Image (cartoon, rainbow, N blue to C red):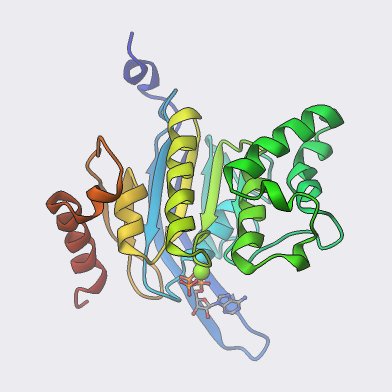
Length: 267
Ligand SMILES: Nc1ncnc2c1ncn2[C@@H]1O[C@H](COP(=O)(O)OP(=O)(O)OP(=O)(O)O)[C@@H](O)[C@H]1O
Ligand SMILES: [Mg+2]
């Protein structure tokens, strides 16, 4: 029996049903951020998947991720993970925020080990794992530093390592590579693809960078300007080789154009 046959009829990994989020300010000025967003992401057994949300600045991308993380209750509709409605945060979901979030009083390595410590993992095992993830994000030399001694991009990589080490089944990443220089960004994109191939997880990745979307995504969900609504859901080609040459290939450029047209089409 194939993995596909096994998954037939399985509960989706993630379901958004008629999700609406309106921020209500104390002055009575409502901001409608998300309007009727609805989709399923299937759980493909044994296969990781990267789903990219692509949308203009301020359209409501972070709001959608926060609702999936359980940080923000929907105004209407619901989010289900493995068929269970989300009410608050959970260890099955890990989030990397748009702005870096580290504990200032812990060293880089202690920050990365933090989730494992909470789960009672022994010190030696924690350290071994942390060393592995720090190396993966290129911060081996900074293990003993404190966040205030790091650049913005380095802090962001601490946040990425700190989340990845917990191996969440649902990984929520909000423009995680925005503060990185092109070469480091390229390395981080490769790391994410490796993780997705090796681990049976689902990654929701927010960006407004079209090339990043084409490069990373198995599926792209294009969002309208605020209030976020789904414009289109597109399966990306399965590129055999993801190297620098790919980005200048015709197939890649055609995908970029398709997404740009959807992103900026007159509504
Ligand atoms: N706490 C809040 N209170 C009121 N309005 C908010 C709040 N958070 C976000 N908004 C508004 O909701 C809209 C969507 O915000 P959101 O952060 O989801 O956008 P985004 O797509 O992530 O943007 P960006 O690409 O710039 O990060 C924006 O107009 C923003 O001003
Ligand atoms: Mg945002």
